[in-house]
Amino acid sequence: MTLTPTWETTSPGHVDDRAVEPRDLAWSTIPIFDEPVVYLGEAAETPFGPWREDLARHLERWGPRPMAHGRAGLALIDRLEAANLTGRGGAHVPSHLKWRAARADAPGGIVVVNGAEGEPASGKDAALLQLRPHLVLDGAALAAEAIDAREVVVWLHASAHQTRSSVEIAIGERSRIGGEIPMRIELAPDAYVSGESSSVIRALQGGLPLPQFSRDRARPWGDGPAILVHNTETHARVAQLARGAQYPTTSLLTITEASAPLKVSRRIVVEVDADAELAEVLATLRLPAPQAILLGGYSGTWLAWADASGLVMSPQALAARSLSLGAGVVYLLPPDRDGAREAAAILGYLASQSAGQCGPCIFGLPELAQSMSDWARSRRRRKRAERHLDSLEELIPGRGACRHPDGALRMAMSAREAFAR
Ligand code: SF4
Image (cartoon, rainbow, N blue to C red):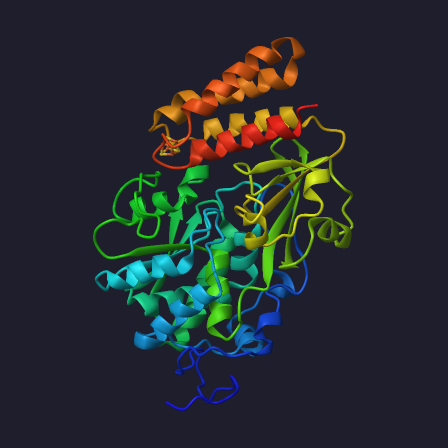
């Protein structure tokens, strides 16, 4: 097959029949969103408005997607590795590891678009699936071709009505053109842990949508055909890389404001350059400097603003400072709020969201929330709370079937450090 130097196509459809080839095109600089997406209130759902890309607009902006069958799939996997693409849902497992493991398994697996935004402070899954559904579905279709899967499943929370409607329309548009792998939607309960990737795998294997232990991060589906789960942003990044982007040059962040602990008042989903500093991002959005941030989401890391303002907001830059972008959330704590009490409230929420299967969650998380609350509320009880937190720091890590309690513990310990004064 002869490769032409541009991405213009003679194909009338939405799939380009050429293989994936590394190219140095302006693709790297095409943003996913033209401007920040703002969600007011608790739900990340607003009418689509003029910014939603239907299939025609998607093709006009991005062009047809290449194919990834056979050797082209292998080339795409090499591309993901060269670009150092990690999952963008929280765990940040290198994507190529999962793809290679899935490709080595028997054909007939499932590719999952995990859009069940378990993280209450996040909004990027909703923004992507409501406004750029075809970019996400392109990435999933490429993955399905590369691992020879039988279908794509879009995993959504049952209450995500607007997102569901956008995905239904997008799947309908693609099926009318034809030539695409079957795609369908599966609805998950509205629970924090039902978006955890091991919950998704368990449910699609016929079990309950609850987390399960997995020994191998690159092959979490165990025996049988692969169930390759990626977050929505990861799929969108695959679609960009397959079209010639050299590496993801931007990150998607959700900047979250809360009017009170656990009361989200505004989410701003914003695409930032890989070298953007956080202070610069907030200044661009005209947001005042906070007292502290919770980086990554409710299971993330608290940082005083003095330590956070200069952070470069890319997964790689943060990893170099032993931090994680997690689900891409930056939760802002205003100067007049008590960070330790906020952390205690979030821990109470995380304790309530456990699947009730493992000791560290059933016993450890309520105690963690109580100790944090004691630590926050009373100087008199602080010493005792300190000792209790120390003992929980010994008891909780690595003992749950999933990382839910580990994440809660990390958040608590970082709160203790950030709000020590
Ligand atoms: S650690 Fe907690 S959330 Fe994870 S499986 Fe066990 S009980 Fe469920």
